[in-house]
Length: 221
Image (cartoon, rainbow, N blue to C red; front, side, top):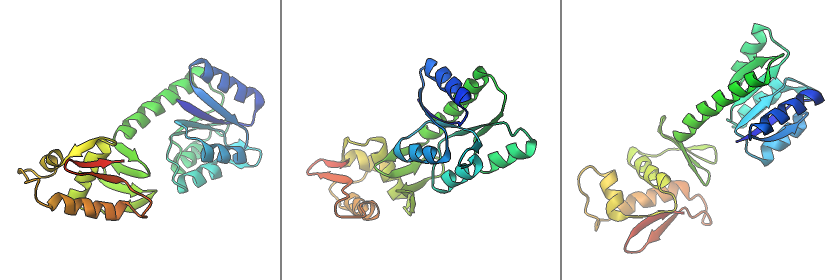
């Protein structure tokens, strides 16, 4: 698990980093908004631990920008601003948890574990592959952050491929899962739906997502 700490205080930053590393987390520690933005752009993190009083800006503004840009990973705010209004504002702007200073290391670790458990449950409900995000709960599909309008049958077809990325799926297997009654695999009905799905997801000639395995079926690359 990789954690980003955004904290400008030297002693506190070292304390948090050391405590997390000793618990086998991978940790990156930055001290300002600019460094935090760079870290988010260059790496993926499972949790962000965010201070609010940063030397080059307000952590709340940073959080707002992240959420508006589509960054959805859990954020735990650690802040000396402990008024109820501050906590409400932080949560409303997109924080997943808010822990006022001072705090104990064990308390921080407990909050991080809770966020990771929650995030793990969410991720199991979301399938992702090559820029495609399929949400099993909301039945929505996004491609590179943009919504894709699929029919219920196209969605079911994509779900099968997303759950079996890289595997060659036979025509009979796909047909049996998509159509409740047995579908003659010699008909072109499956090919029609595959063509529609390709048209919506393979947005450029270079973006080949599905491979036709002649005489067998299809594969999500």
